[in-house]
Image (cartoon, rainbow, N blue to C red; front, top):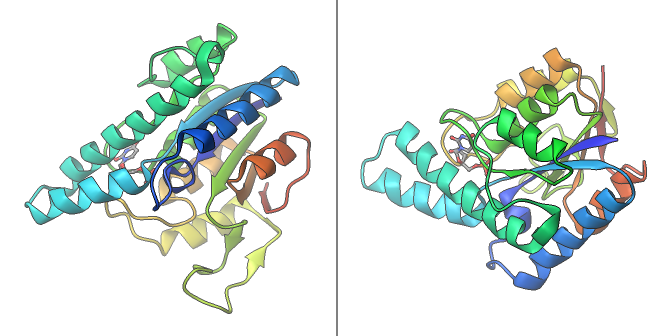
Length: 226
Ligand code: U5P
């Protein structure tokens, strides 16, 4: 399978800070998935670093699009760290376009992208990349174990979807914020791309174990299809 992994920045760069062993653990899982015969492409989010820089930029009067640029830089730093841990499985260059990412994939390596342009999150980058390279599966690894009707970290009565259609995902994304650094399950653009490209998507908790499980067809989260 050709799989695009969309890793939330909070997964790679948690609130308590980055840890080399944790990043190596992720890199080892991606190497394993590739060794099992899959083609792997990765998009990483900005996490804590992005949120901190965006907040300071906003306080200093930066526009939302400039804050987005700060966020993009943070996503690329996270991508560089993961590339470092992947060693020969990747290439020491963060692709800034889908063409570049596809080229790296076609060289038999793992491309690791961050953001591209202001106005969306890395979810939209991952969905676009999956569409561009005609991926069989887009895996969204987040800090919750699937898609809920509302934020499960805030609402105790939030209900998880085992399966949902792309249209239902779009409806859910419409109600979320588009401000720099906002964190909903996926942003609206990502949901619309998933819908138009008819992508098969698995939303799972972004732990190394669950990412490996998905590559084996075990999805402990939400499947978005149709
Ligand atoms: N961002 C963009 N464009 C991209 C990727 C990221 O503007 O292609 C900015 C957004 O402000 C986003 C932040 O909230 O960087 C961090 O990315 P993410 O972790 O939310 O995906």
